[in-house]
Image (cartoon, rainbow, N blue to C red):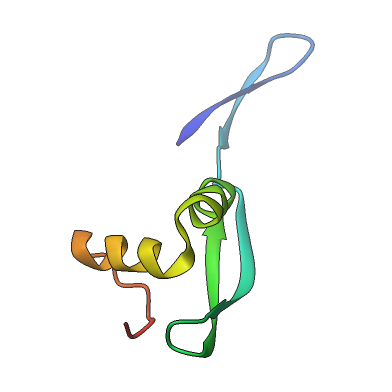
Length: 70
């Protein structure tokens, strides 16, 4: 996503809005292995709510390649 950075004098310059990403290690108890994922803050909230295994299964059903074998 892009937009403008507006200065005090109202000069507009281009800027980008980047997602809030974290590189985080997760343990999957169902498989007994650790995985390292780059996730957003929003994804962390979903993982806390549903669990990592369910979230990865949903992503696989949508066709997203996570790099984790389930």
